[in-house]
Amino acid sequence: MAERSTDRVVSTNSTISDLTDADTYDEKEKTTGTSLENSYLNLKTPEELELNDNDAERGELLGHTSQENPPAPKASAKAAGIWIVVNTLATIGIVFTNKAIFTDPSLKLAQLTFASFHFFITWLTLFTLSRPRFAMFTPRRVAIKEIIPLAIAMALNVILPNLSLAFSTVTFYQVARILLTPTVAIMNFILYKSVLPQNAVFALVPACLGVGMVSYYDSLPNENTNIKTTSSLGVIFAFSGILASSLYTVWISSYGKRLKLNSMQLLYNQAPMASFMLLYVIPFVDTFPVWTAVPKNRWALIILSGFFASLINMSQFFIIAQTGPVSSTVVGHVKTCSIVALGWVTSGRAVGDNAIIGVFIALGGIITYSIIMLKHQASKPKP
Image (cartoon, rainbow, N blue to C red; front, top):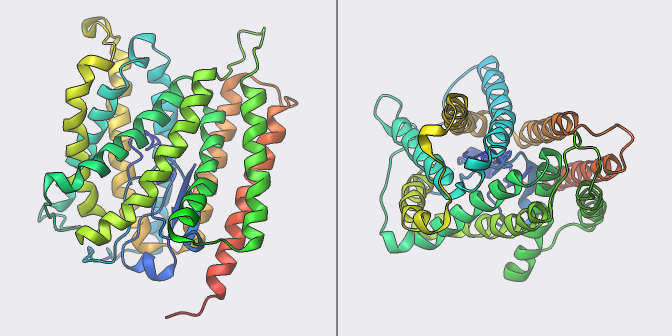
């Protein structure tokens, strides 16, 4: 559930993986409760693109709408800083926790069950936050038929990246999420004829090339069994996950406006629907372990993964309300670079490995892109 995020809400792997996640919102959108991330993942036009975590990625799942939003919680800069630290640590934690879970062959192929569990945790967290004691948002229900397509996209947005994480190194998994930004930009161009500033497009070229280099070198066979590599399945799932996450990103904004729901209300409706629908598919797709034979430490990791998902949900709300786009972007890059660096250390690869060149090129390109977009947003006249 580590990403967007990551940084991206719930990176129900991620998702929750934030989740690297591509997030969007300008200052006006932020004040109306726009979601970051990873992450996840609010993109209405490429001009509003901004890199965040992920998701874990994202990898978080709250989207933006301009409708009724919960009042921003009042807190000091110190409190905001604490929530940023909590969100960062939880996002990093959920990626490596999920990776540890998926290294168990008996759990690697129970992906739908794992996703359904995370969706339930997501709903439970939002249900708690909507209670009068917290009153962070007012839950609203919509017709089931209205939310089914988005719930399916949400499920794919989590399951495919999780499968990528299961069959890839953490470094490749996170670097590949960088492609979410150009993919969403292309979708927005096709659907809305929206274009990015020319300099931003140029910055995305090395980002894509860097991801390509990492994909190639990280998937090469290695005689040293101590060095972790990415399988062909991991590459396929990674790029399939990018497409699914991009579609979900583009849809979530239009659904919010059409259904007149804010970000938390929208996710509150999606999560239980996605969890329930997966129950019909799980018996035919998942390969179940012998549950009594699953070690206690694996159960502890599964519970810890759900706990991280809850922390990401709660902290994301405060970050959205209390930080600006510059702070959010910096936090997103910190999470991305931290996950990539820790993933590299745990992969057993040497500093001189060719894949690290691609990592630096990809990160340099996406950070440059973010700087260009922030300057572009700052230069736009305020309404």
